[in-house]
Every structure is written in C-alpha cells, then in structure tokens.
Image (cartoon, rainbow, N blue to C red; front, side, top):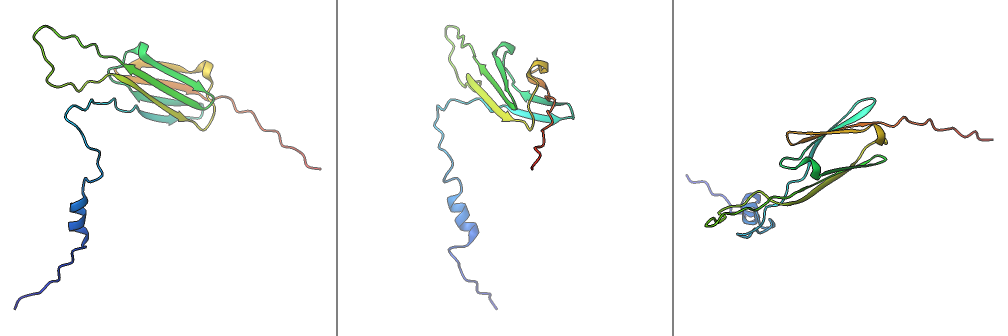
Length: 142
C-alpha cells in the first residue's frame, strides 16, 4: 500500500530557501574593505569604570578620547602608506585606511581630571573614576 501526501507550495522550508540572501547587500569585485567598529569591554566598580577597546594597527598618536560628563567618545584613524616598488602590482588589499569612532554613555558622570588612558598591544585601556555624587536636597512642602 502506498502513502499519499499533499504538496503544499507555501511550506516554510522551500519558501525560505527561495528568498534566502535576497536582501543581502551586493558586493562588487573591487569593493574596498572597511574598518571594523571599535569593540569594547566595559566594567564598573564602586569608584570607577574600566574600558578596554580593541584598536589593532592604530598608532598611539592617532587615537582621540573625549569625555563630556557621562559621555565618552573614542575615535581613531588608520593611515596605511602604499609603497610599491617598480614592477610590483597589488593582488589583494584587505588592510584599509580610514577613521572609526565609538560613543557611549555611562550611568554617572566621570571625573575627567583623574581619568587615565594606556595603549598597549592594540588595546586601549581607560580608567574613568566616577565623580562624587552630590546629594540632592529635598524640598520641604508646606
């Protein structure tokens, strides 16, 4: 005895295979690679925030950190010198030139005068002490 099954053209599996990758951006043969975004690890203690940001291949002088209250901005630029000798040609170029930045806000304001930064082995380490919180005055209602 044979089993009969009904064909359903709107089943999820065949339809999802049909549209898979339809809305992905198209890539050309000579697309320039772009800089990756700055990836960070952010930890908090009672007295300070600690930020570790990955900035591989960036020179220390090309990194800019700005603090405005509880807003922290990290930006960097990468410039690759393209030195080519006579008779050389580029086969593949994946190392790119450009600028990248990251802005994030913290729960409390940062003491900008006591903040420190260190850059070693492609990792930017920031220590951002918290500002002493001022106690809010409660208004007496008559």
